[in-house]
Image (cartoon, rainbow, N blue to C red):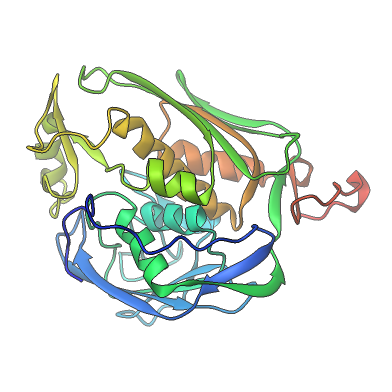
Length: 322
């Protein structure tokens, strides 16, 4: 596939159904080609099945550096996108940028174990949403495995703040995965203040969130180009806003597309916890930096969380393992 136009009229393959109790991987490998949002380079991507307990692992096929586990503590940059990398390696040879849209698709489709092979320093942007990644996953097929999925259960509220922006994870009495409640507030009147709340699930993610595109202010584009970013950006892969105007000729896909994309980003960033989260996530004016800081705060103490299947009783505090 090339850097394709949005699949607004092309149906997804039938949605794979499972109860969320077992781990899942892909039935077969699948590949695609697209453009990197920031480098503008042609990027080849291949998603491959992985054994139980592997997790999500990125492999730079153009680099001899070791693979990168998709984990919060491997995040080395959060400016404009979430970047995984080897902290002890200078430069970009071992880095993979803009992983959040694929991570969101994997979380939304319930994929636990996959190898992500990429031949450049960032993921393809496709249309700026997660829709193409969902399409690839469903074309490959999602297969159950024998191992039970271990969720990350939130035991104690953790919160990070920056000015009036915040991100927070708190316990929930429901054993049903991740509930999200996010608001945004932008000076540009085309965006303004928006709010979205839902419980994350496969059908919900695909129908309400996967098509929401990334967005940028027109006034920011010149600065991004000056610092070597957004070289592959266009009206085909991002919403461009100027005050009260959306510059994309086709307009928005949904009146709440802006906040829905922020929710998509948050789902992808939170999947860097190393597993599905069972808890409640709230955020206001958040971004990749706050999302990553929140996970680092969460895992700073074993009293904040425990790992267990959905429905399993919480461990006694003295037996809880980090």
